Length: 238
Image (cartoon, rainbow, N blue to C red; front, side, top):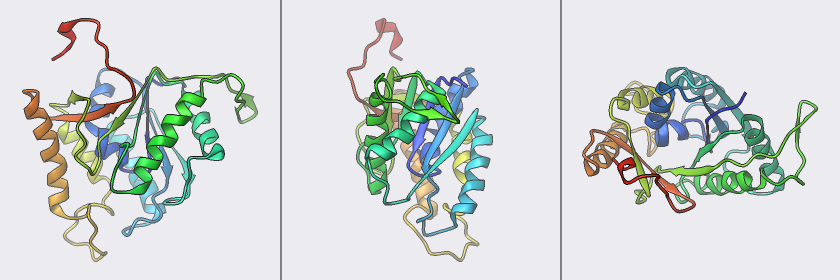
């Protein structure tokens, strides 16, 4: 299955938090989108890997994506090495996306920056003909995405561009809240974490509101780029 956009996240819920509104908007425009989680988030303080598997599936249904896979890398300890790069390359070649979205280049959680560089490097390597991979006995063809963008997460990185997600903030929030084990639940008896407070969910909405304010829209999501942005016409800029 060829996808238009493939979204990678170090943990289940990264894609929803960083790019949930953009995913929902692109799906509404007919784009085929998939998500690949690098780990099952098994080191998370709250919940379990099994619970997050179910939550990720539910979030994917809310966003109406085409497919979701999990590479089951070791949470907290995966590396940007040949073995891990080859597994990411297999996903890129399998789905042949034009655009890849992945973790923030620098963030509070060490897996985010690490996952960002891993996916970026793998996207480049995926285009090299002398790197051979196969899935289920089928030899894969080289494929390099045209664009790799990094969504913003915990840190307030300055975006290189923003996407207007007005009309899709509620869908983004619904997908985030599908991870009931991770986010605010007044009835939960599990330990508090930096993302389980009510104010964290409010901050996600506030950030989108603030980025939207800067472009004269209600809500927006920010991304950083790996190469210079080009437009076909000045009128492309909103």
